[in-house]
Image (tube, rainbow, N blue to C red):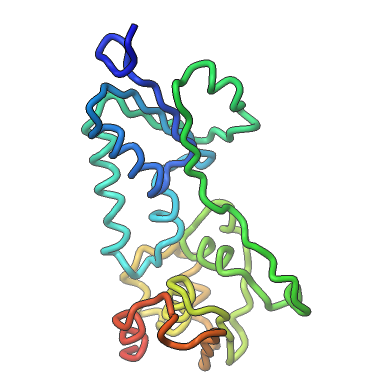
Length: 220
């Protein structure tokens, strides 16, 4: 029987339900074949970094989740299976028995160590952990961060660096209109931080954040 027909849809498993997984699914559903797609994610909820990585005070970016929701709701051939970790709950060999194709859209789950002196000292944190913490990501919800010092250095000049800088610079009143988790809002509202240094190894031209994002910080 020919693949990609009503009688025999092309069966695809997408491991990871973040932006890349959903854009892959969107492209497949627009192809000239009949396709059946199952998402597998180790978390109980979909949308990946849109849910757990985008700054909670930038609701316009988080509204992308509405687009992803339309993709999965409007198509009865798309399904989501959460709380499933590939390699533990189900294995690649098993998936290959039931699917014609596998798409791995897992992203980078952990930080890359720099291998520099002092990297693991107390008070040195990764952006992944801090961002996951204030977004309520289950991997980081139990973390605690020392916000009792007056000065903090943010190393890097990408989108995440400017997000962290802006979140640290905002007052509790400015953050309360976001969808930040209550425990993070309480902690940041009582922050003692007054001086924030954004440090990059290259110049402003190479910065990954936009001029608009930098301007937003200047208006706080």
